Amino acid sequence: MEIPHLLLGFAEPETFIGATMSDTGRGTFLVSGRPITDRETVDKMSMELYETAIEVPKAERTFHGVTPATQPVA
Image (cartoon, rainbow, N blue to C red):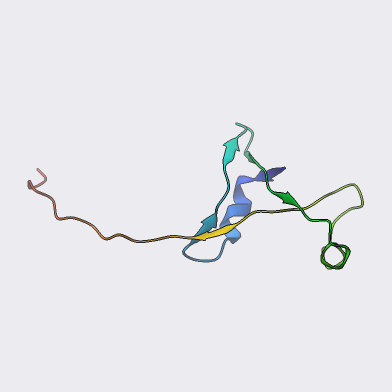
């Protein structure tokens, strides 16, 4: 599925899409996931009849801290 780069701005804070994305060079990413076929879930979405939806995992960012610089920056 192709999604615009700007769509990633709607991710919840400290999270990211946990799927491989390929940059198309046209302002979009290609991403793959599990097709959503459950009728109840699809009916809750606002999309055209020719469109489809996929589910991709949401992953949380983990902050591991920083290490102090060993040499002063000039």
